[in-house]
Length: 193
Image (cartoon, helix red, strand yellow):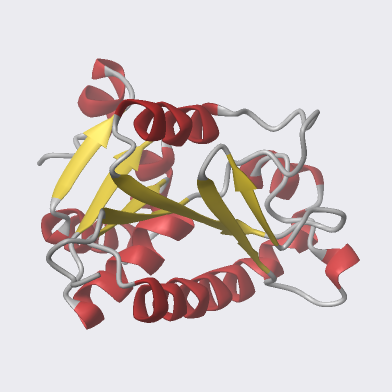
């Protein structure tokens, strides 16, 4: 099949995604990709998320391929992401040291999958780490990146001294499109300013 005749391909990156069937992690990203797949079966969707001990490294969920990358070893020590990054750090401050590993290995995994899958778009959920890592890969490869801000992820980043606001503006201005989950998010985060 020539590249002109192939389906539109999207690589979705997220850090909130169920690890197994009865997982307590919110399903909104999974629900969204399933809905897109059901409404637009001509779109080929792949999802890249952090791995968690006990989760499959790769699986098919309703025609959507999910890949899980490792970011810390041994795997049982991967405790930063699930069920949610900020609450995990508040509970165990030492997990903050896994953030650079998450950023680095998510960047590598995203770059690798962009090179092999050749998606038409990157779609990042959350600013940290996905907006940053997908944004860098987008700049390097030229693949357009779309970003969805959830809750206060951008606002938290803007509170990081010296570099936080700069990073937010740098990546937001380079996104192909930006969406937010509520009017409150737009107003509170000043995401389009």
